Length: 264
Length: 291
Image (cartoon, rainbow over all chains, first blue to last red; front, side, top):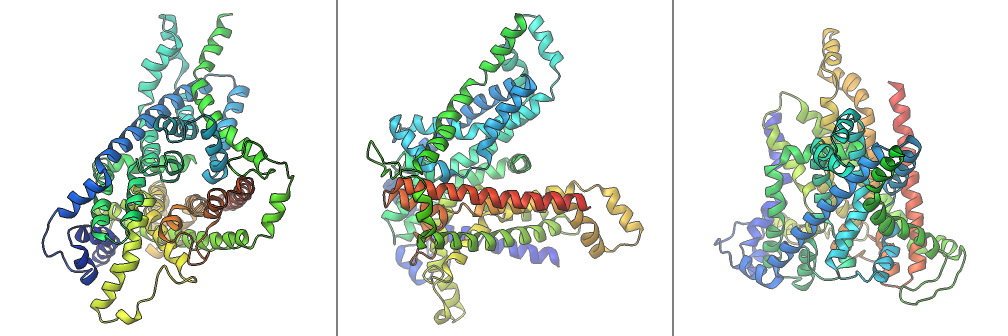
């Protein structure tokens, strides 16, 4: 009995998606007159229009590029720094950890205004590579902590024997430490990937053009304010990639998010 | 000699992270501290040093004070319901007697993977068209009220969106906490004759207290930063009834061009969030000792 009740609640919980999907196939008039009913015909006209009017393909490309590059950058910067701190003397590593730790408490709005000033003086306002660099700078502290914690526990004997064999530190890092720390890389990719893919305010301030998917959705909503049929088609398009990704890697994503929560 | 060179070469590996973090976080934080003491307007090359005037003026700014009240209302509403509902769901979904658990977990967690900006758009639609249509179906269209247009109600309507968005996250953290409770403790309670009710209230919940505390801290810190949902759904209105602190800072800087003033407000926000987080942390730690 309780199971059935919970299933009903869960279905109700997902009704917003159901509304979006059904509305995305209706005409504008149909949405206003019969918002609840199923669409009269399952025409994809709204999707064709929404894709054309919003340049959806371009924003998808930008979102993918920005997220993938920034996550790769965070992984590399975070793993190298985490490794360096794990292998340095205790006083120094403590100092570096607290230096990175400062960012944990600070809400984005506290640095938002001066960050834009910094971006203006570096002339990276409106620049996609600039946005990626900012993401790496803001996203690496969490990665540093996760990698530090993990690599600290890896016995030094492994590296020492590699060094005796003639490996440089970079090679040790690249061929021994990074592969060993693969679980951390998964966690970092999930946490920072979701954050960057979904982020709104930072790209809104830095790019000032509807280049990423969340920006595109919001700009589209503002410029087609009452055309709910197009807006709903756009909503479905915007959420399908991340929902598919979630359904495929559900277990890993959930465990990644839990690991992140416990660390914070 | 060799050991010193080793030390420097490992430290060199920390340079990329240190450089980008310093440029895009530490430097803005430090220059924000300085800008808060000036009347910088965002465009001028120069600005005047005004000391603590911005901080003093903010305390008398009724819009700033109201944005704090709005934010606290929102955060209290969201945090209480996210943690309470998340806990109930986690307890239910951890019970072996419930079927379809993978489906239920996915359903409640799914909104979390989506952008707050994107779900704000769909909820604007739901509050406007869909709910009215649903009430129309049961012949109660006239009783429909404006979810987003009523200044007393709008902030709680936005709270509902935030709760819907984040609830599943706290649910899975709490489920992980429940899984981590050693089964022999629960078995011992069973042998002592404890029923389901007693096991839940006298064993599970006390052992779960630190995890509940972590959830409360995360939920509070998150909802105190509310920006996207009011920005997109209500633009801070009607009136200023949904202008949260984060939104006030945004407006001060980018609408009124009072960047120095906005930096000062942002530092109040930092102090507030740190105070709330540290207070909660102390409570959680004290609770942890009790059991």
